[in-house]
Length: 106
Length: 317
Image (cartoon, rainbow over all chains, first blue to last red; front, side):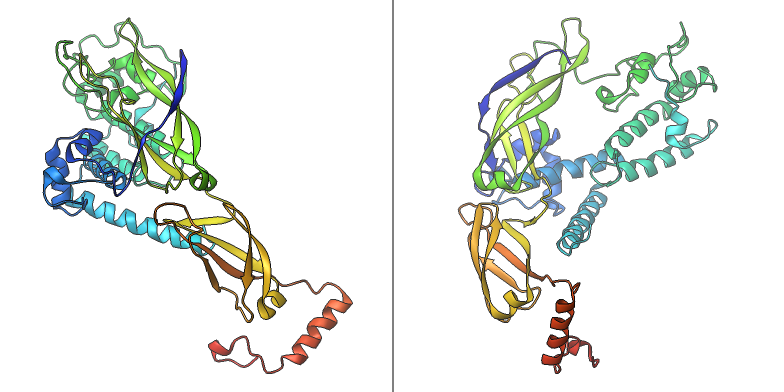
């Protein structure tokens, strides 16, 4: 911890359904080649908007899923289908947790 | 510097086979993987296990580590003995493929920095900087009104001597009105610096809501459990209700049962299609802790003799 610097107030771009990320941007954000992202789309892990790869648009949620999928593959030695299954199960757990919270549990 | 007992971290005996070590690593990695685990300190544990595996999976690093002897205890003050690694050739070897930047000082003192991403990269190459990712916690009210949040990131920095240090990087970021949990804000050029003339990477901030003590959020919709008195529910009432955008007056229709959902259209998280605000009625019963209170409940029982609260369950009172 040597120096701390404060910069002026910054306005970023909110990534939503309108302002999406391109294939190149998602690949860069995940630090992988575009082929890896294309594989995730083909496996059904990601469902970008747009007809073909160079016109795909990804949301922030897609990017997060892609990063998790890439990390799971690298860290746990599982293949693409395994990562896809893990993500699906994680979604279900998250959904159940949300319902539990809604019912006042924890 | 504290000694690290990699065998203890991995939960294996000092004479464990490579296959046992791999199996232990896989199990622990699955258990503590930050994307999967809800364990406390999952990320720290995951890093620790990764570091231990980095050493134990590599026969050469493991042999060198074993040479330190079995008498060291975790957390004990440690300095590597002089020439402890003579006869081993792992510095900069190709075996290190973990994210060495996250390893402990103890690891570094033994094995060096590993082959980080900068190794062998010459300045004449123009490589864009890496993107960075961080989470930002905001209150639900911030999504209604917009806000500015100061975010402190720890970013690696290479000093003139080539040593990597961590420094604080503060950013004031505007949180737009109408943002939802799980959305990302992208700050162009705020990622890692590029090499040569490469452009810096971007910073992605993932927004998360701090749990709220009274509201619950589902996508754009916001829920509130609202306690009402039996007479308010039975006779109808106009009552004051808190919402993230201020107190409003709400009409409770007569004969409302507990669990009834009342929708306030457009009073959820704002936006082009704003969410809705839902009020879920909960019955609050006054205590029968006085004589007159008891008499009152007694009269009520008399009055509603034919009322069976367990009608649905098919039993008589």
